[in-house]
Length: 277
Image 1 (spheres, rainbow, N blue to C red):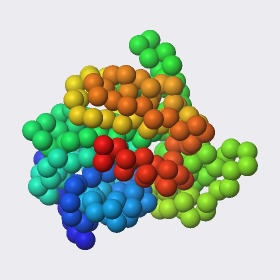
Image 2: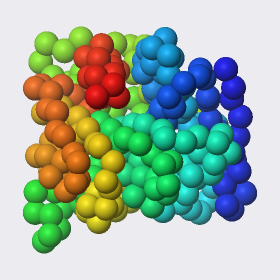
Image 3: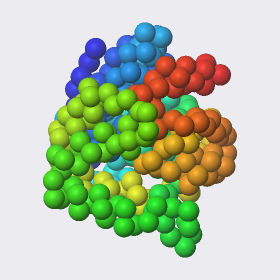
Image 4: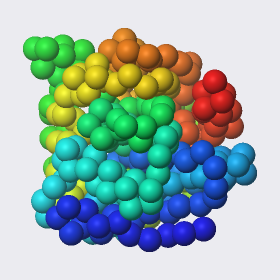
């Protein structure tokens, strides 16, 4: 097991956790979390004989809390810095939510030359989240303004409300909230930087990944829960799968945004099948 830091172009220190040998898998986490959000996948694939790498996005987790650079181009370049630092070739890149946008831009911009072999998007933000004339099915900007206002007013409370409610579907009738999962979400979120998290809302909601998706040649699996209350299914998964040259959509009836945690057994089995295909 190796933890350490890679140095980004602007000097920011990007934390990573690198375990195991064999085929490398790079995990890209969601907002406002850290690489720790992949615990259920890291252990599973480590035990399956893979090399697993999870980094903390700048401004998140243990990485530098930067004032600037909290946008997708820099996030993708930071991943490239980690990949180069570790000498990784032919990696499978798995991105959840905001991390799906980061992974998409990384593979499109930096994944050539054998660096990236496959892409997986789980409840991911591409093609673009915010509603516009070009994206009439998107989420209204007011929803993201609400996140910004709540973040600035009381970040600690917001980071309880999101996991206790829509993120894992714990607000649905009959759902049984898992307190440890809620607490761990809060813990990860509060490790990061306020300014970076505020800026990242614009990055995950307004960045258009259409051209990135169209340019990606690698086999790609798009996994999305139909009851995703954070990144609504209809405006994300099916559209991304159509834009990818070699994309496959796998839908999960009634699964929430955080399905990689709540339904790790199902998600891990499907990831393994895709990696072995």
